[in-house]
Image 1 (tube, rainbow, N blue to C red):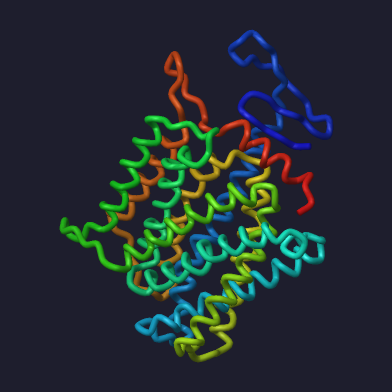
Image 2 (cartoon, rainbow, N blue to C red):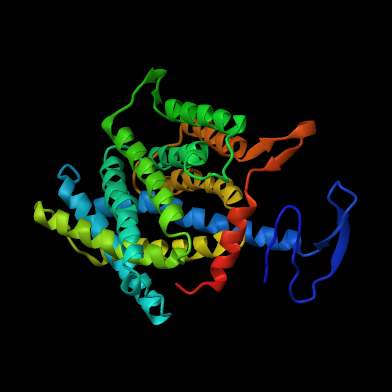
Length: 356
């Protein structure tokens, strides 16, 4: 068992301990390896953000190298469908081999997974891929963080243990400000359909998270991810083909790009859910703010004619501040505490012991 929280620490493998107090004259053990363990988790989290951030420019580069006509949207839908159908198939095979077959044994879970597939994959990536064809990948990655802010700010409406706070109001204001700043062009406000589609995609993420928490909180997140990606990917492929979508010119360079996209999708989600089981989700959301930075940096390395602007820098700071402020509560005596509930941590800790 390997659980860390702000008020206690369960130490495995006989690690050395020091004694600290919690402010209430009660001694509690603190492992000397806590800092190394936290650093390792943060490092893995940043690796996931590097992979996720790289997917924005690599998908856009995929459009170019496959010579996909991005003005014909069924082509983009088909491209997204191929990515998730293959990624979902790989994860689903893993789930089946590890006997995670809830979809067959529990029809109610299948319905919940289908809803996640609809919002998290089909609608979400339809909006994302079309929006990505209209605006640059760095801007897309920044706008997609608005969903994190929205979820943090309205989650109390859906979950009783998620308290409303002024910090969340401040986070919402900062989040809206970041969206406005990233759409400023030479001090003129520009908000096109591409930006709206990306924000719509982030809202689909919010809905899928609510569905997951409400209906699938007792199911392995990796299992839901695998089955939902497979379902959503098949739907996207079917829609793309039905409306005349074409994959484009297939070359060995294109296959290498697609292989990277699929591998990054599978590895990043696998690492992410592994870390989620071991660390506070609200703190991981702070790490997630590195995603648009990586997207912008990698966009400059690929032949996409991408540039960094002052709007990107300011928006990145605002979004990061929004998530930080949204995840703290101000209690008595001006004490600041992380706004992660014990219930959430218990659910994450128990997932290792459950067999979906």
